[in-house]
View (cartoon, rainbow, N blue to C red):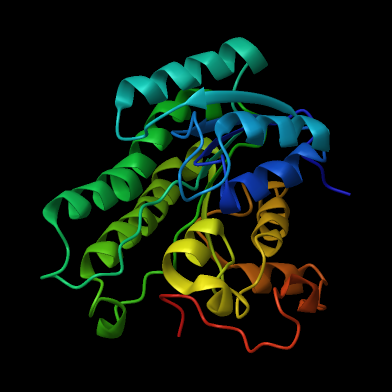
Length: 274
């Protein structure tokens, strides 16, 4: 079975949610995880810090390097990369997971929030890729996986949440461009997006509430799909916009009910997926 044993993953926003789930799945293989996230002390609304995530990663069988990183600040990314090289000897995989969200229309979106989403989502993805690139070029099977949707120009995905759509599609444009740019270097660049809403603390506490979260799938479906992607040959799997359940089904995993938060609830589709 394909494994991430001994691989070093640099994961932005890995202190909670999907990023942490991907980290824990890799940790079960014995991987090294660089937890590049902002939360050093407990958040008033969202559980988990880089330190609690590190404890869980070690308990799962991996090795953890918690580093405080605001991916809007280049010097912090560069310092985290340097620390990763010092600690683990390099970086094999970059997971661009960190993202900011505000589902608001134009009159309701403060420009400060617009700037935050574009700086974290699009610029942060671009910057993490740029600064991890020299290490990825040295890796034997290098991957960049970005949690962003397929590019879908239907106006319905822009109406009512234009600022978020711009920022999220900016991440997808990084995938499109970097896949073409790095193909000859043997670096796989792909996107992964969920078919349905995913039950994270941010989605449950800020957007859907407990009742809405029953219509979600768990973070494990994204973690399992990411693992399948990241263990593929980087020279044979690049430039793809993967959907989580399709990745699993292609691998022969057809029983997806185990990923439902509530086995009896109808699933809620995610943004940007028709």
